[in-house]
Each structure stands twice: as structure tokens, then as C-alpha cells.
Amino acid sequence: MEYRIIPMETYPRRAHFAYFSTMAQPYAGVTVSVEITHFLESVQEKGSPFFLSFLYCVSRAANQVPELRQRIWKGEIIEYQNCPTSHTVALPDGTYCYCMLRSEKPFQEYLPEAVQAQEAAKRRQSLEDGTEEESLPLLFVSSLPWITYDGIVQPTPSPADSNPRITWGRYRREGTRAFLPVSLLCHHALVDGLHMARFYQNLEAELERWSG
Image 1 (spheres, one colour):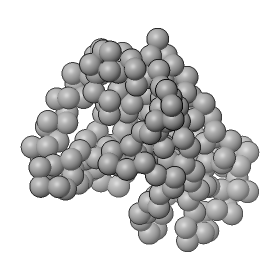
Image 2: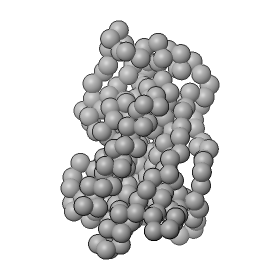
Image 3: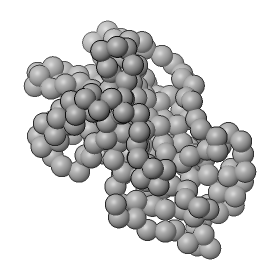
Image 4: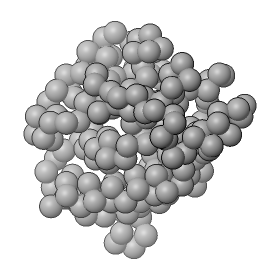
């Protein structure tokens, strides 16, 4: 996957990077209630799978934020050109496995490939994302379709990795409107609140574009 190394001497957040890199728990996260009213109506009208449709929008929204494509590797900052998602896929025994997808293609091409990739992942039933270096570009994605929540605590490794984690729950109705809790957890040495806000702004735009 294509990437560039960001020179630390010209990196504008080098002081913040040094500060948060020393912390035992360097993550920052937020949960936002995202309106999906028109998106949900469109999904239902088209008969499209909700999860894969929303995942497509999430992936494209995240990849528009350079900071969410940045990773820490051997003390350096790497910025990938595009980051695939690695999402959880439910298995019949109540456990799950991981499935990797890319979202650069139009949705009409993405969907059949995504369905095939999920079926292949169910056959493999693997929790492996490859080596540590191979997993660097990934956006870790999971969902809790059984509950609507206001906040979530994510398990994180020690030492910390720098892969963003994106999670969503069950949508809720408020009158005629529908809202979905969407959580974003990032390494604070790379990502600030401003960058998180840009992800949610991009997501709103992607949902509107998908619905249109």
C-alpha cells in the first residue's frame, strides 16, 4: 500500500506527538448521535444491506481525513494513501471473525465484492489481520446492532497501536427521525478533536450523497 513518511522536523504537531506518545493510555474518543433518517429510508427502498452500506460511508468518510490515515511505526509517522477497513463478522456460534474491505470503488462494485469477502471470512473464521506491519493501514470497525448506547469503552493493546477504531450501535427513532450512535477512538498523538469532527462532518456528507 502506498504511503509517505512525514518528516518530524516539519510536522506541526511534533510537541503534541511527543507528549501523548509517552502516555500509558494515549487514546481519545467520542460518541456522536448521527442522523441517518434519509440514509435509512434509501437503504430500505433499495433493499441494500444496512451494515455494508453504512460501512462504505464510514470508510470513505474516514479516508478523507489525513490524520486517520496516519500511523506510528518505529517512532516515525506514516501516512497511507488509503486505509482498508477490518470489521467484525458474526459467526453461528456467537463469536466473530475479521473481514478486510476497500472502499475506493463505486458502491455498485463494492457491494458484491464485500458480500463475497464476508462469506470467505466466515469460512476462515480468523482473528488475524496479518503481521503487525500488515495491519498498520487498517481502520478497525465493529458494531453492536442489539443496543443503542451513549458511550463505549474499547479494549486497546499495550503498547498502544495507532489504528483508529470505529463502532456503531442500534439506531433509535425520535418521531420521524432516526439516529445512530457512532464512536471513534484514536491515538491522540496523531488525532485531535478537530480531526474527529471532520470525520463526522464527512460522514454526514457521505450519508447524504449515498441517499441521493
